[in-house]
Amino acid sequence: MSIVVEQLARRFNRGGSPAVSKVSFQAPEGAITSLLGPSGAGKSTLLRLIAGLEIPDEGRVLIDGVDSTQMPVQQRGVGVVFQSYALFKHLTVRQNVAFGLEVRRVPKAEREARVEEMLRMVQLEHLGGRYPGQLSGGQRQRVAFARALAIRPRVLLLDEPFGALDTRVREELREWLHALHERTRLTTLLVTHDQQEALEISQHVVVLSEGRVAQAGSPSDIYDRP
Ligand code: ADP
Ligand code: ADP
Image (cartoon, rainbow, N blue to C red; front, side):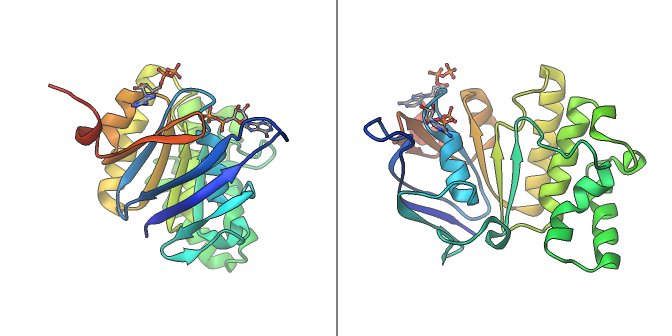
């Protein structure tokens, strides 16, 4: 499942400079692709356009060859994880993970089985009855991953998923994501402003600057390293 972005553009203010300006790139199937660049470069906007959370002024998004530009979020088959977890505070961990499955009307028995499978995957089966406020940051982010993966997405979209975590937990979760990806080969797009993170975890890097693609390629194509 590749992601192909063609000439995507989004401007928030009339007369202002576009947040995303005719951006084209491909995220290869089965790889982790990093969208790298400084704050304000347009990374989050681009991710939201791909996710269907934002409508482009121009251009289109193909997910596995299917034009998804006009599709609502639920039909795109995308799992999304944000920096700020975005969990529902009045729902338990289990209910949070089940949420996308309820929206998609997955039958109860299958839903429950999948939720348990996801909780095991993120090693939180013992905390299914807790509320987000009773969890650590790392645990919350694992719930967010479980919720995103429960729908069996075709692609995984991650917006600074480690950004709110302290160094040790970040390192742990990054290794966990790496192992998950080795197992699943899920096509993944990772927004980050951390070059080191992009180089460590991704096979493909797209550098954004002022709403445009500055560079794209493998880490060794782009960066001169010993
Ligand atoms: P921040 O202030 O968020 O750390 P930086 O200006 O340091 O932002 O940029 C974030 C990352 O994006 C840096 O690690 C840098 O290597 C990379 N980057 C920014 N512009 C380019 C570019 N034109 N080509 C390659 N890498 C770039
Ligand atoms: P990044 O994720 O690289 O930090 P963003 O996509 O968040 O960049 O922002 C790119 C530009 O678009 C910034 O100038 C930002 O202020 C602007 N922007 C993003 N979202 C909105 C919005 N909802 N309304 C107005 N401007 C926005």
